[in-house]
Length: 151
Image (cartoon, rainbow, N blue to C red; front, top):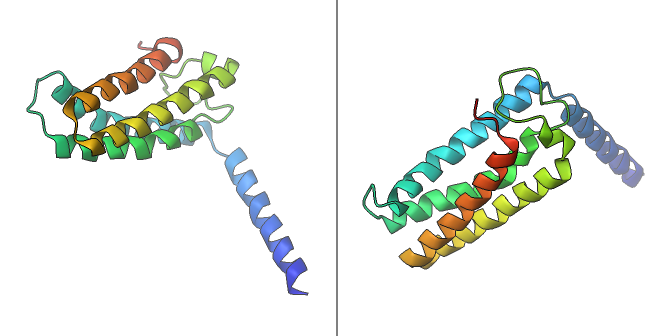
């Protein structure tokens, strides 16, 4: 008798989770994604300064920030549910929702490159870290060029 109860409880929990995801207000989704990108920039910016030679190279600090970027990147796509293109000030272009498959591919590439960045940072090889940083930054630019309004 326990098995049917467990199945019903699991189904109810999954149903509630699906409803909760579908019921996200656009303003909440926008706030979520903006917070994620703020955290991403908080960590990405100091690495860029090191790569550009504007601040002293610190491999341990670079690695710490690269690890954070790799943890944040997979969470960003959640902030773009259907309908979150309106409701608050956002730099996200409506083209995201018109081309969601392409947008997801770009986000997947960011996740992949961010993981490679964290892996390169663990190596301690400065040249490898800088090169992978440029690759990762390129994935950001590719998405920003197409899907972010700079207005």
